[in-house]
Image (cartoon, rainbow, N blue to C red):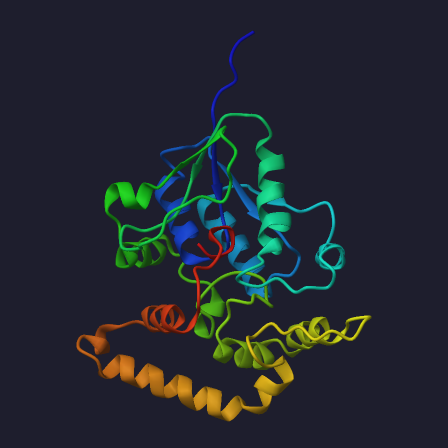
Length: 268
């Protein structure tokens, strides 16, 4: 029996880095299989961006979903909301659908970690999935990624106006400013996130943001916005700050304010 060919896979998160990687490789590796792990709790802007990628590059994207929805897994985890220390959402709704998609096939997974990022690792421990890091291999940094996006005509997703990472609309890695902006941009989604905090049959209290509920956070809206604007102004006033883009500033503020690295499956 002839040995099956090695599969080439690239996961799109709806963020800038994985999109730039698709731009870089789509002509060189025509057999590439693109996938998006869909939790069905994504921002509308994410789906719009994926449509833009498909149209510009002429590629097909496989939308992978877990067998059960978020509410099922939340119940299975006794109502504990996912958190930086308990990322069960990534395991159940991102990694497992990917591993089912690959099965036992040998696959090379292309991952968009840049040369200027100090992080590594991989989202799967399956021995038949081999990770490769083309940006690191080619020495490509953030400005190269932004150039790829601009030159392709795809550009950045619309949520970059107010949010620094892709991921679910209630992602626990959001900064408090981003929660405030979610309430402004998508009040219905903010209300759903609030509902997840409030609805526990046994009365336990869990919060998305550390130390306060979303409604308590929203009461401090003006202070949070003022703090954000002050931080942006300080970034601009720093050496070479005037040359920073909004993406650079949001990235830097995110790295300063968020404890722990985001999940690679969600935020590339």
